[in-house]
Length: 113
Length: 113
Image (tube, rainbow over all chains, first blue to last red):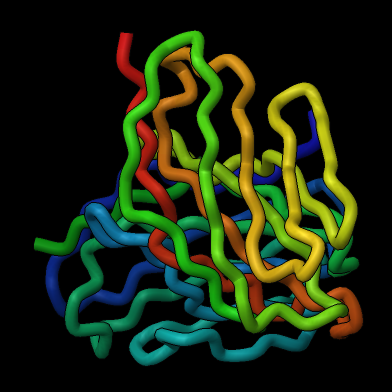
């Protein structure tokens, strides 16, 4: 089935460790996005990528890094520089055409202890 | 992208129509209006989008005012499963692929029996 997959669903890490969240899509979409969501809040854009080997900072990029080496994959690394990493992380993809919708993964809930 | 304003919450009776307003007074002629919803702890789900004309699909109807400064999402017969946060966003149709897809706080809709 076509779709966008995030793994794992739950992730626990110790403070000070970098952690990488996976996002894979088999929809042949050019554009991919990473969002952060805190309890009771809306989605905030971390990074987005329009095409392979290219990405742009969103509104809250500090403490995060991404790569886009393959069209189907857009991993997000939460670095030790991110002061409040515990959150719900959502990945999305779209064709990049503005008249088509974005598809979201089911999210990864990261808890840093 | 134009910002959107939505009421933070609203209640709706099961079986009745739910009318969700969205203000986008600074929208440009190039921007689509999109609606998504997010059921608790899941990824957002696309509902509907439109540019100028009213739109209807199997999930909902979208009514856009003639001046395009506001819109209303209509869930014709709300069910308990429609309880979710509903996001209204605008998206520029002339931008290159992967334009920023920015979400606000949304409207938390509670459907009551």
